Length: 323
Image (cartoon, rainbow, N blue to C red; front, top):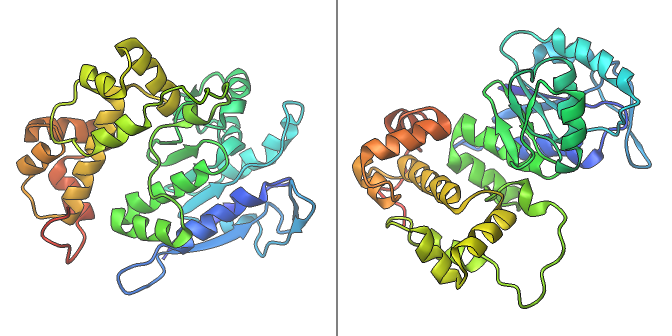
């Protein structure tokens, strides 16, 4: 069984500490077997304080890190003056055995950065802390717009509930969309959230007469199989091109073109997993037109070909097609 070790540090945030246990604990196989074992440890095995008015007792010390297949570090309360809080965790991270997948939630990315694990790599953290992290760790390619970053063996999430998105993504990566979607339904959370952190950054509240792009996005999702030029999207939203593009980016955190590609890739992934359709037909249904175009976009998004993805994630006994 894949072991997930959660490292609880002093002043840990309780909500984020509980995310791995809830999400990975809800991931079940076809015979209802548990797919992950989740254990929690501290650096010394002693209880840890939290950001709330209670402490948490743990059953394991730092020796549990040596048994981890995946290590998850939830965030904790810290300030730039607390540089010493990075030292001991950084030593523990440096001693991890090879092949461990390392995951941070929210501002815990600072620990990975302090240990040098993020140098030259993309990463994210809470949007409110992005500038401070950039100053403290300039070698990291911080991206404050996304909900999470998957860089292979090191994954980072944005703030707070984005840890749910990242853990579901890991389940999806390990076992496919069917298992991840079922875990999401069990936890009563969306299996996938569109857009990035930009949609959650504090901005002036729009007036009641201000138009949004939500209806157009819903309309476009039902028509991914055909071309959707920007002019048509703006026309549906009854906005000028400039206004539509600006408002779309404000609400979703990316351009309309990038958003459409992401939705088409997700549709293609679902069809590859849950149908027997040929790749060229999936390419047409997803709006890529040709199998070559689908291969290019899928490889850009997740680094594999359609056939390789299907071999890995094809759900046993899936229906011949999915509406």
